[in-house]
Image 1 (cartoon, rainbow, N blue to C red):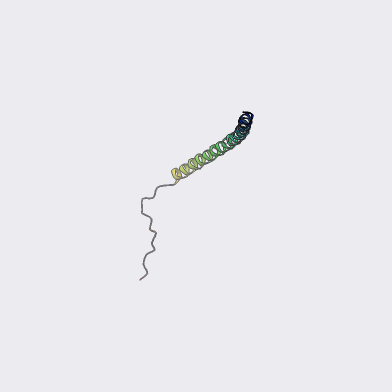
Image 2: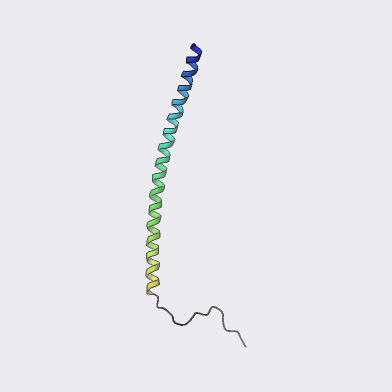
Length: 76
């Protein structure tokens, strides 16, 4: 009977250690997640700013009515 209580006590101790370990890991993961979310938001802001700039530049480029030729004229 005492050995059963000892086994149960050891299992409870292991469970408590595992719970504490998982709580620490969870806190670390939450912190990492918060940092990554902030980094992602900063990248999204940079992307939006770059898109705004490109759209502005495209709007300022005059439209050309003649098609652009990428191939040079053949020499005769």
